Image (cartoon, rainbow, N blue to C red; front, side):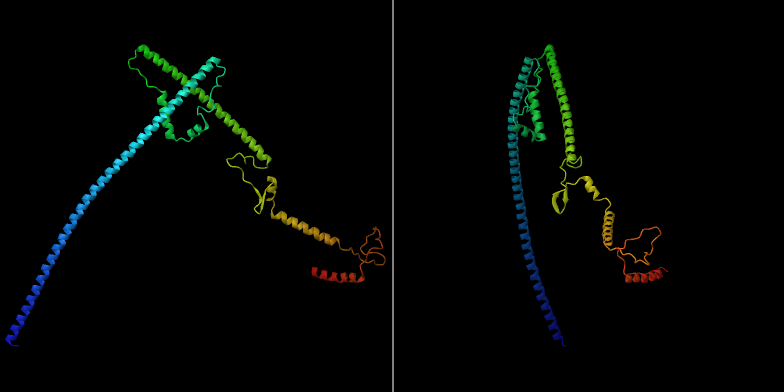
Length: 333
């Protein structure tokens, strides 16, 4: 290879290297432009996301405020409704208390006028309820409703003490009135407790009488004495699971079904079988041995003669019997 060819190859390689460098430089510039565009787009998206977050936070704040205002409004409406119901209930209880006080005063006046002879005649049998519907409503009330009505009733009955501006004599008179009220209420409480004890005793006695009557009724029907005294009625005992009729057998009859079992049945079967075979054997004709020289074999001295008309075995039967006897003797040996 000459020197000129070497310079040509070198120049060619340098030109190719320059082209590659130029192409790489273009690629790098293009990548930088694309990267700058992507960074700008990412920055724009982040700004848009932050703006959306701010808008969403403002919207959630407004919604929370609206929800709070709505809850407050509903709470105020419920409080107003409860206050209105409490006021109506208080007025109703006040009217009922006034009626009760008037009724009690009328009863006291009547008792005082009658000299205490007709003490219990003026009381109402419904306990002041007025009707069955009111009593039913009273029974269906919850514990909270009863406590609330109790507080309202006590606030009506127990008036606040106005002790301002009272002197010693007025305070003594007020204390005396309160003491008399306490004594009267304790007396009524004791009377009611004794009346409740008496009623509980009467109920217990009536329940015991009812139990005795049910025991007698069960024994008449052949049931267990405690069958009708439970919470639920007795089960209906069927005669069999295959027959739709009640079992009228007594306890003793049912008990005998399980006594003995197979042994008794087997003995009854054997007894029946023996009777049948004995009857068949009794039906056979009674054959006797023929006479020998006018005298029956086996006859003992002093026995009467047998009648002449009795059946006698034929000679062939006797011969057969005589032949069978030696065979039996051989078997015994």
